[in-house]
Image (cartoon, rainbow over all chains, first blue to last red; front, side, top):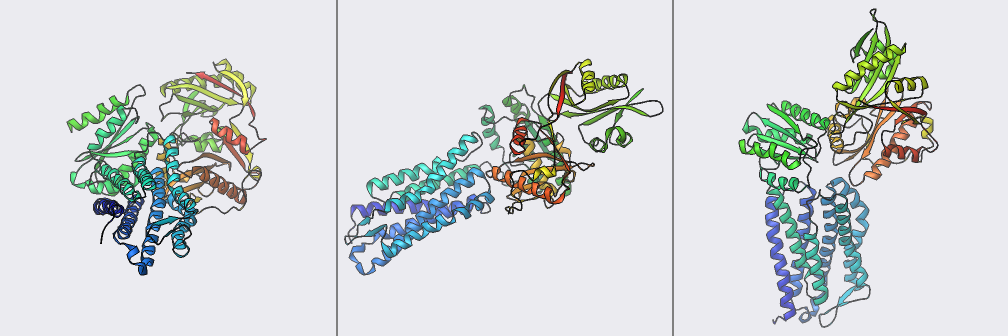
Amino acid sequence: MEFSAEMIINIDLNAAALLFMVGVLVMALRTVSMQDMRSKLLINLIVMAILEAVCGLILSLVDWTAHPDITIISSLIDMVLEIALNLQLCCVFFYVMYEVYKSEDYVRRKFSKFLIPIVILVCLPVVNLFTSFFWYVDADGAVQYTFVYLAYNIFRYLFLVAAVILYIRFKSREKNAQRFNMWLLVIPMFLGTLAEAFTGYGAFILGAAIGYTNLYMLIANEMGYRDHESGFYNPYYLSHLYKLVDNGKYQLSSIITYQIAEEGEVGKFADAIRSVLPDECDTIRTDADRFITVSESADRGYIFMLSEDVAAMSEEAGLEVSVESVTRNKKEIPADFFIDHIRLRKQGG
Amino acid sequence: MNMIEITKENAADFQELLGEDLVSDMSRNFFKGLAATDDGDKCHGVLVYELLEVDSEEDTKSRIRLLKGDSEEIKAGLQDEYRKAVSESDVETSFFETSEKDMASFFEKIGFSNATGESKELSITVADLAKLPVKRNAKLPDYIQGLTDVSVIQYRNFVKKTLIRGNKGAVEDLAYLPLNWFEREASSCSISDDKIDGVMLIRKTPSGELHPLLYTAFGPDFAKSLGFMLTRTVNYALDNYPPETRIVIYRHNKKVLELTHKLLTGHKGEDVITGTRNE
């Protein structure tokens, strides 16, 4: 069989995307926790992308015009490819929503509102299989688009547009709070879409694959700051935190220090206090037996409550812990406060 | 005349002058009191004040809640003791609110700058709640509930969260009050991811008044949660309290003032004289 230039390019694009995605899937399954919604959504995205790439590969490898009796198979594979692409766009929207709002319940509540458009998006390629309402393959094997294909395309890309709008609105409200960078996902997808629109080659899947790889790298990068024993941040995070404090992006105002009596009890201590730590604060393991919780708040009421809760939970777990706190004077610069109470301790510890 | 400190242990001895609500408040962290007694332990005057902004980085203030005395000399004596006490607590400003002109004149004599205005306290009844733009018997989402089924950990985690954000409503000592201090059935909360992300906290005082003390929510659905919690609490009040039950809203900041103007059009605070003094 002879491969045309177009077939070779499409095969290359789909194969490259497939290799990317299989590699990322293997790494993701080995490293990320499958407990949280973010990981589950990312795995879904990668699996859909793999499915799309496999379908694209099959469609590119076979000369369907030479086998007119089995064109129904190519139509079926094309339908699966379209459904996989549509589900990816929906998943991207919910992924961004979760990253922005950090609430599984909120995403679940919104999911029920979007269920009908999602079902419609899944059904449209099925409708096309029987009616060729949006596109069809002509006798020469070329894909022809009907006048309603544009409407179909706009409808499914609305999910991506909605994700971008959601992210931009959130960023404008919560300027410094967000570590998630949505552009690492959207720009490769957008470039892939443009390339496909202008060239006719299946470049979207490669753009999506690069985008999902970037998402995985963000998660893996964050995991590099995690202490495996306790699940809290490790001392490497302190450098990252110091940069934020020094740049004025984090107004460090209080530090609560927990010193456990026995180093071997780290895991038990972490499990005991995890439920009482506020999401707004970062807890970092600074030494073998020492942890700190940092906050932009110097409210003594919050410090009193957290200290009390940590002491109570530790006692319940049969652990001996000493708790101390320090707050920044209003006139003190956060970076100096950081150096005085964290850096020096780390060096002396 | 002996000046003694009113504490939670001896507050009941002064109930005749304090009233049952303030007696209950004397067990709170930032409520302080002084009593002027004679050698026979008869009480001739009391002064109760509440410290504000103690736990924050702002200047500490003192709100004089009650000043009563058989004579001007007794009131002056109480004020002198008060000044000593607040200087030890690093209070920068004292303020009061009264509808009594004689009391306002007394405060002016001892250095307060007075002005007239509307009281920060707005008093309505449960019957007035029926006029609020709130649906009766509305179907609420299951993540809106009372505080009876929330755990102490969930409640404390929410309090920590709201304190970090600098929002404690009209409860200066929110960090030190147990969950049961609030009226758990009448109060409402919003739960997401097994955590409280919004509350409407109501206190029922010993005298039977209802005091809404904190009304806040955060998270992506905060606006909806606020609406649902208000609906739930208003409906609960209308169904469970006599219509003449007093509700006292302390409008401690501009946001609360604007909200009450919006929801309770036509209701105004009493005309009062307010005064401040730098300590």
